[in-house]
Length: 133
Image (cartoon, rainbow, N blue to C red):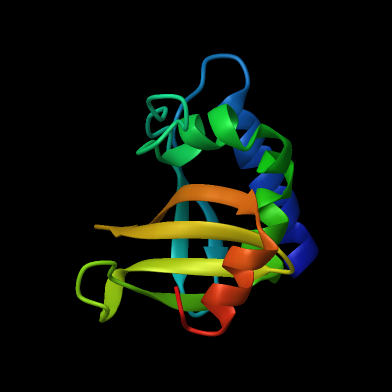
């Protein structure tokens, strides 16, 4: 699919996942070089900082205003490898897609990648692009 068509497909999947009765949308999008991307519900964060949430539930809870930009970030952004926080080595099960200051975090599952978070942060985007994240 052309990029604009994939953005539209992502918007439709996001609407399906977040309106009415929220549900997972497997195979919502595809990114060349990465593969299948799933939009999963996940769970809300806890505490005043809404820590440890993931998936669409976390994005809706903490980054609702950035949600609508998610398909565009996935389609037009560049994929980056991430380091494991504990070992400092590359984590093959985690990736980030950066588009400007927007970042989508992904985690590998059996059949592709789940979106775990999406937000706008110039500082984090710079750290990812420079390989410090």
